[in-house]
Length: 166
Image (tube, rainbow, N blue to C red):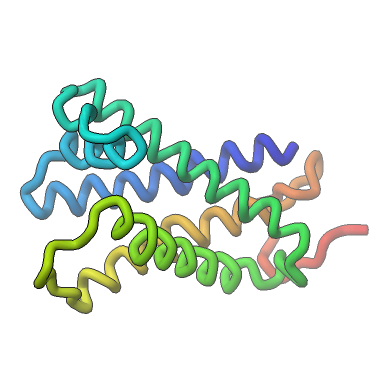
């Protein structure tokens, strides 16, 4: 059943995150296809940037593959975290912040070194940090720790403070 939980967390957080990226890209007057091609160029080099919709579709696949790794890591770690159900919002926020730090301060600069003189502004830090906390970390934590009658790991009807049954 963990596979289903990981798949749902991946689809929900991945969709929220890529929607935020698309909106942000459009608000900056940039091409959404170009943004997706850029995502694909991370692992695949420059060919996606000149491959039209195939490069953009590859970027979408890469995005969801990365999100699947993120969801899998939290689901696996959740078994070891004390009181994870009761503190799922805190764990989710911390996980989202950790993912932001890894992606924006390690992964992206290693793949695409910043231009000299590129300014780091409060908005350039706070916006992606908020997106990773609110749209990635918290949804993954919520889905990974929810419960149902059929599956004790999946119940959206109960509040965060309800202890596990049994």
